[in-house]
Amino acid sequence: MMPTMTRQAALAVLLILALAQNIAAVNIKNMGWGTFYDPKGEFCGDYDCYKILGFNYEDYIDSPRGPPMKEITKNYRALSREWHPDKNQARGADEIFVKIAKAYEVMTNDEKRAEYDYLRDRPDEYFYRYGSNMIWKYAPQSNVFGVVVLLLTLFSMLSWYVQLNHWQQIADAIIKAAVEDLGPQNGGSSESIEIRSKAMKIWEEERDIRLQMMNFGTNGNKETRKQKKEKTNKQARKQQQNEELRPIITKLVNEIDDFGGGYRKPEWKDLFAVRFVQFPYYATKNGLWMVNYFIRRQRGLPYTDEELEYRTIAAIGHVAWDAASEEDQEEMKKRKLWIPENLEAWEEHLETRHLSAGDMKKYNRWKKKQGTKME
Image (cartoon, rainbow, N blue to C red; front, side, top):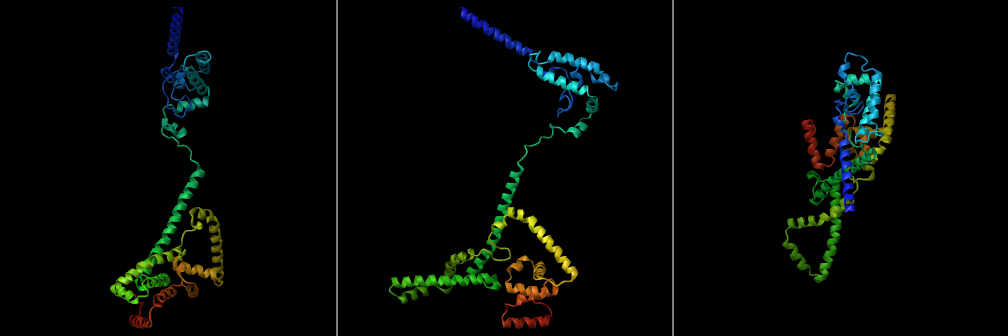
């Protein structure tokens, strides 16, 4: 029985000690320290520094210096002896002691206490000086380098896609014009006509190979081929031919990396990140060139070949310049297209140079009669 009684007595003692510890625990909110707007903890936090040290602010409103320094020190020493963690084992005593020390620091500093008294009824002024973590909360600081790398990667991917899309638009237009055998009047171009011509040669070679194999399989029965050929009308044969030409034309077009006018397949130099890095160099280079250009113009010196190209591109645009042949580019520089009359004459030349001799005569007669450019 003794061991059992001993264990029960020990448990009872532990229970009493636990209850005593809970009773000894102090809740700082029950200290009667009042409240104060100090979310940043510049003074005594949420509590009144005066009441922490046993004073009442209202009792010293008429006194410019507030409680005497001697009384502040006396109250602080009494409270610190009571709540020092080495002497008071109650839970929460250490927190109370920290608040008492902070209040003593504020109350014994004339400048700090004057500011404290001034901000007592001015929370807006407190917010202006110190801000408020109750309203604003800063997000974790982002890695600037990582953000820059991410943005450069995204913009580079976008620039690659845009450049590829520009090339694909021209490629699709050329494929359509070449497959449908469209002329210049119907949306065709010199590129589409040339592509179709190359595709026709390839198609004819493949057709001849197929016919040879068919002749070998039918012992050269030409009459059979002729009968089969007559069964299909001309329009159907044309449509079938176009469909057979389509994969050949598509392959030929996909082999073209640059259509001119900026419509080319994307390269590494088209990436936004590369352009971003190169921008200072080219900006400086172009700036110096422009300065030199204006100096030469002021001196009345003749145009250099580079300056002629610059003035011409400014007049017709980069796309038209890149799309023109080398012969046309040289001719445009000679004609000084930045002069409006010369530009109009050049545009008329481009419209009429593909006309037949008969159409040209009609155009000249119409122009002579109307005195204006044909619409």
